[in-house]
Length: 594
Image (spheres, one colour):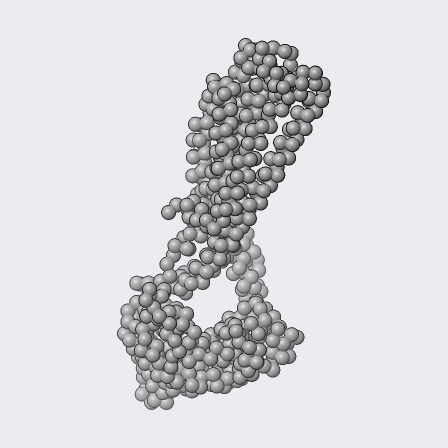
């Protein structure tokens, strides 16, 4: 399906408003076609000497006003008629514009929501390979192209097409030869439109890409402003921003030059057609084939004919530019989720929490195999620590349980049900996660704690905060549970953010708990306090935790050692040390904090 047809599909819910707007547009066209005639009647019926060519016009005026009507009064009434026509056309245009803009804005909200929802549904594997700023740019800016294509595209084509046909019919009736001479430049105009439209689309795409890269530079620079200051790299970041901004400037200049050049070419062709009209038309007046009023009307209609042609020219270029943005939106909407629910997937319901991996392989692509033949069973209530060197596949291992990714081979099961046979939403409803860097939203403490259970009562939120040992510091904040945490929790310390994340897990009360380096960014004292809270959270839950700290791993029922994506050892901490294998060697080498 073409980009333009897909764009129209977003306007189907607003078809009634659109048809009414087009009806107003027809009224505007009809009134605009009347505008030259009052002046023709003034020139031919009142100002010009009586001739054979003006007899019909004078007879019409006598029929309207009477043969004894005062010329000054007739001129006044004809001028007032022009004002009335203009006002009515303006009111009809106001109604049409309002309806079209209203439909356009509603469609914009619709595609933005659909695009954002689709981005939310796509798996982490998709987001791992893209800049978040590029996705943000598509949602915020590229989506506006759908409104451009419709309001400046389809509706302009409709109204300009009607104006072209009506004007052409009237001009033919006035002077067929003069009409065809005036339109001799139209094929050249069409060729110019086609030639420049292709350039404008490619240059518009380049601008979108440069602007997206510029936004990425801004977001990354501001998100890392502490590190920039710490290393004194402000000038470097500004220089990088300047380079990106300059690239965007050059792309915009190229498009501007193309637009100006194209306007010059089309304007010159139209000027040539107008010159032919006035030359030949003047000869026709001298020969008595046309009256002066007819020539003035003909000139006005030629301008009306060229105006929609010119409008169609700019419409074609605007649509080509907007098509570049629309394509970027549809590229995302066409991207299938590689971790999607099967057609016959069913809710998993409440689970005990047994987790099994059978012959699991996983790789982000064929050249990056992360896990190899992983077999593991974790029973309900058991706690398992996952350790290994950097790049061993620990976090990837953990991500398979909530089905952020699907294994490339083998199966992951919860309570002996294959995760591919259950809905993702129901599965994740049974899982709580606490990450190394707890993600907090720029809202209140209360909303962050209740993120996994928005319907939770105030008493339940307070209880969760108390169990996470977060209640005291929360109540000392200026607005207590209504205090804003700042962007990414910037108003809180790392330990406080972790306690908020643990409170969130307490409130969700899921049977499976996943912990990904929850204490790696903490000092020893804070770690001990956080681990005591996590120990409380783990009770009665199946727990899998990735950690680099042996003193933390030793608290768990079992330790699993990963090396290059393989499970090489598993057992309790003391047993693994006694074996003298991979775990003992890492311990002895001091690769882990103890």
